[in-house]
Amino acid sequence: MGRMIVPAKLKSETPTKPSGLSAEASAHWDEILPEVEQRCILYKLHGSLLEILCESFAMYERLRVIYRDSFLSKDANGKFIKTPYKRYMIIALRTYNQQRQNFHLKPLPVPRVR
Image (cartoon, rainbow, N blue to C red):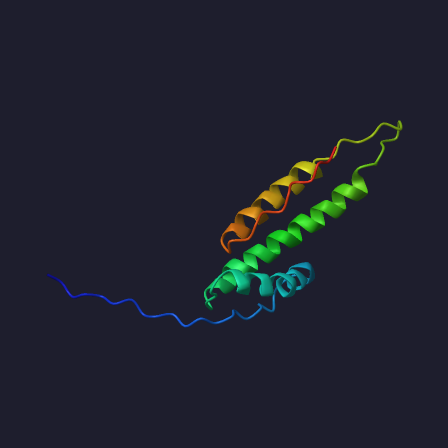
């Protein structure tokens, strides 16, 4: 038989907010961290997952604003322009919801948009 390897015990520790987060992601980090801390034990290595979670939310928010602002855009003939941002917004929200599951958080509902 070989040597028995005993895994190192991890110490519970709140991850430090990365300095390179976008403004939206940084605000979301501050907003969601207390909820995440209530739902699961955090370790320093969770920092990368939280960073992905927050940047996913920031991407969703940016796309939501772009979609909202471009929704009523018209071409030179006065016809509404079909925008691809709805699809991208929904994909970003699904990505965000997948990341929320890593921390046992309920997914946000997908908005009903035209």
